[in-house]
Amino acid sequence: MNILLLGKNGQVGWELQRSLAPLGDVVACDFDSPGDLKADFSQPESLRALVRAVRPQIIVNAAAHTAVDKAESEPELARALNATAPGVVAEEAAALGATLVHYSTDYVFDGSGTEPRDESAPTAPLSVYGRTKLEGEELVRQSGCTHLILRTSWVYAARGGNFARTMLRLAAERESLKVISDQIGAPTGADLLADVTALALQRLQADPELAGTYHCVAGGETSWHGYARHVIAWAHAHGQALKTLPEAVHAIPTSEYPTPAQRPLNSRLSTARLKAAFGLHLPHWQAGVDRMLTEISGR
Ligand SMILES: NC(=O)C1=CN([C@@H]2O[C@H](COP(=O)(O)OP(=O)(O)OC[C@H]3O[C@@H](n4cnc5c(N)ncnc54)[C@H](OP(=O)(O)O)[C@@H]3O)[C@@H](O)[C@H]2O)C=CC1
Ligand SMILES: Cc1cn([C@H]2C[C@H](O)[C@@H](COP(=O)(O)OP(=O)(O)O[C@H]3O[C@@H](C)C(=O)[C@@H](O)[C@H]3O)O2)c(=O)[nH]c1=O
Image (cartoon, rainbow, N blue to C red; front, side):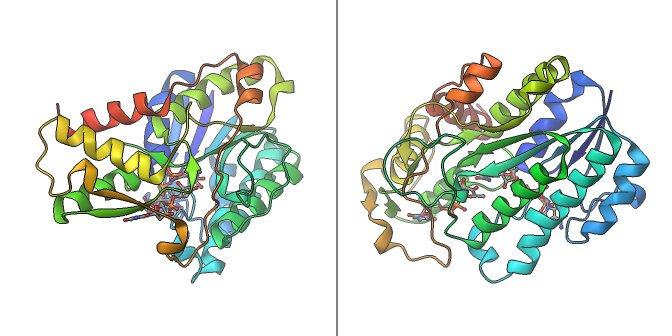
């Protein structure tokens, strides 16, 4: 089996290098890869030659423009990376008969209400990032290729930039932190997503009817404030020297933390469809976060 992995150096891409390895020969690319393996999503048409040269049976796309606030001031680049390029890759996958895995986000929703959303819930993104990710999903679906679109949320990994690492950095510098407590979701490990991707791909090879869009997030829920408190309490309990004590992580409403991009308040995603289709158990978010914290602390 020939597998083309795009965005190999991101949080999810890095974990996919590990999880896809038992499935076949993985050709892993990023936008700074040398020569013919360069996969620059800001030049969407250039991706056709790469896909045609590798002729994969499976393509996994983990590349994206994930800087949510920055996307507000560079919407053309965000659209190229999150929509046009995945659309081109999907067209090439359809022409080859290859299966495409693509990732999307809780930010395709407007975050109203308090219930977890399922895959058929109406989308209404609030940000450039969310709008371009939604357009990418739609182009993948329209291409006619066999695909899995996994919508996830609040991704973290031991490698790469993410909210948990930002909190640890700020807690080392400041006496107190203010963190939003009215945006609710589930921190999800890049390792979990990569493992689910590999399992789902194996099942999909045997049963093409499983293709489609799924929500894939860790179990349980929290706010960014609850997540930050958990990370900082863990670090204190494990002897890390931080200026911010857990009780000095203060809860604030979204209105007190203005950002260029608006984020959804309710980021809860229902994983019932994924669990039923693939027979998967999705562990509680704290289990994965604690493992990541152990890994980055070098314990
Ligand atoms: N991070 C999150 O919280 C969430 C992510 N997702 C989705 O999951 C997927 C993976 O996200 P994640 O691993 O966290 O993202 P990262 O930001 O960690 O990685 C994105 C990858 O895209 C690459 N990239 C950036 N610019 C280009 C370009 N011009 N051409 C090609 N590649 C480029 C990055 O390279 P480099 O590292 O060198 O910049 C990196 O390898 C994405 O589809 C994202 O939208 C969904 C929900 C939550
Ligand atoms: C740094 C900081 C952030 N915040 C808030 C701002 C924001 O609402 C929330 C998270 O901030 P971040 O900018 O780290 O996270 P953000 O980039 O919004 O994270 C999102 O990334 C994209 C790629 C996704 O797809 C989403 O699922 C989600 O993970 O925390 C505070 O309240 N206090 C702080 O000190």
